[in-house]
Image (cartoon, rainbow, N blue to C red; front, side, top):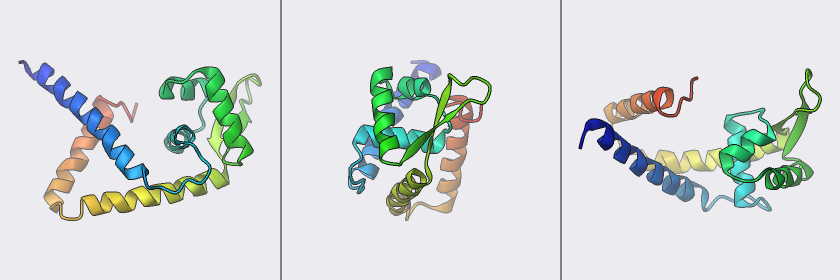
Length: 146
């Protein structure tokens, strides 16, 4: 097996582990009347906003009509809002409202607490290596900084 095949296998394994970690960190989260899909949309908005309906649809793998319906429900709950593009009034962006940001702040606080428990006994040197590895992943594989 060459190094690129090994790297691909590691990446697949890490993707699966990331999904499991996300599930574990969000399963006990009190989100009131928000569905898991609505939470995922709000989480995406938290890290990348404002964004269009089509970007949400593409990222979450749901149809445009379903995306529109979920955004309408979140808007009715006061958790997100639509803003018009100043140059193209047909184009709308979605962002979290102040209430939505507060709710996601509480959710991320819950996740942070669980994360800190998980890394509580990890030595500083390993934390630095993990941080460096995440930076490399972010700039190469995930293209977070592009």
